[in-house]
Image 1 (tube, rainbow, N blue to C red):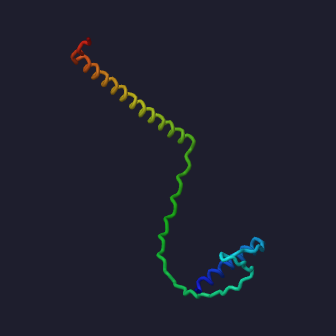
Image 2 (cartoon, rainbow, N blue to C red):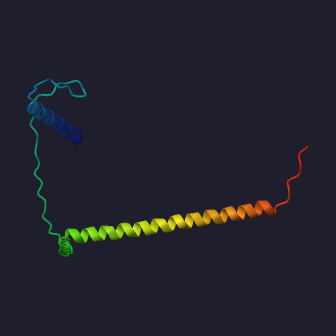
Length: 124
């Protein structure tokens, strides 16, 4: 049951560390009801890890950023905005015209359908 002893030593070491950081020296009880001393001898096992060199693939170098276009002159910006607004207005006017034509066409078909239909039966 070596793992139980290692677990208890780890718990004791952790509690001692917490108490040293917080500055408190409260008596802390173990799960079995015994108190834990703040100074605990813990066996530290050094583990030597072998360094393994792994060659990672080279990430592709991103291309340099494209330079920004030169700033526009005030007059150029103004003419571009006016052209865009004129285009937008033309577009909206076309939509309005198409909606009006569709509405007129639909009403014409509806009126023709009503006019051509037989009279409804009389109610008694």
